[in-house]
Image 1 (cartoon, helix red, strand yellow):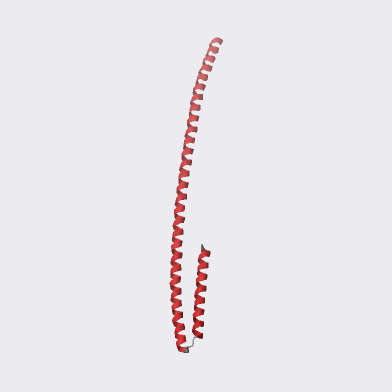
Image 2 (image 1 turned 135 degrees about the horizontal axis):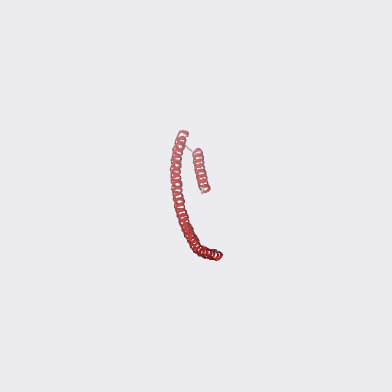
Length: 137
C-alpha cells in the first residue's frame, strides 16, 4: 500500500514538472516582450504551485482516509480475534472444571467404597482375632 502511494506521488510530481517545463519553454519561444513573458511565467508558476498544493491536500486526505479505514479494520479484526480467544478460553475452562469435578467425584466414590470395604474387613479380622483369643483361653 505504501508503494502505491509513493508511485502516485512520483507520477504526480513528474506530471507537474513536465507541465511546468512545457509552459516555460512555450513562453520563452513565443514572440512577446521579455517583461510580458516573465509576467506570464510567474503567473503560470503561481498557478502550478496552487494546483500542486491542492493536489497535495487531496492526496494527503485520501491517505488519511485510507489509514483510518485500515486502522478500523485492524481494530475490528482485533475485536473478533479477542472474542474468539475469550470463547475458547471459556470453553477450555469449562471443560477443565467438568473434568476436575468428574475426577474428584470418582476419587470420592472410590475412597468411600474402599473405606467401607476396609471397615468391613477390619471388623471381620477383629472378630476372627477375638474368636481365636477366646479359643486360646
